[in-house]
Image (cartoon, rainbow, N blue to C red; front, side, top):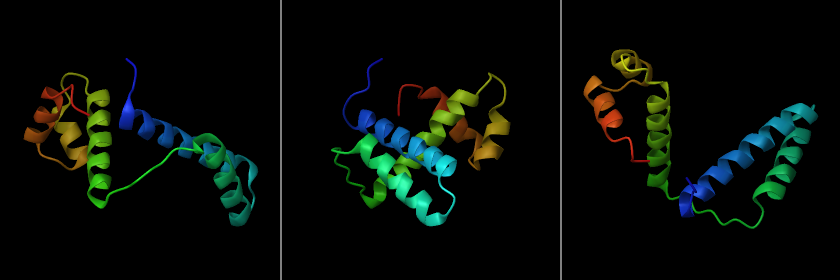
Length: 103
């Protein structure tokens, strides 16, 4: 499935942040070096992309990421365990699993 629009940009951004963090920890020995390496790597990877982060969107992104993890970790019978792990109701777990196609 090909990602389009905002989902593609978000995935590219997240991948860029992850790679940049990995490289910074691998090659930097001081906070300043790590910051410089992170920014250089991130700019190389995501340079040219435009990002706008509305305040409300952060919570939506967190919930979407949580929901994807819940779907990924679901084994068919661990509803209650997931509810406890993610601090949400059992009813909400069922709702997330039912709406597989969202997020």
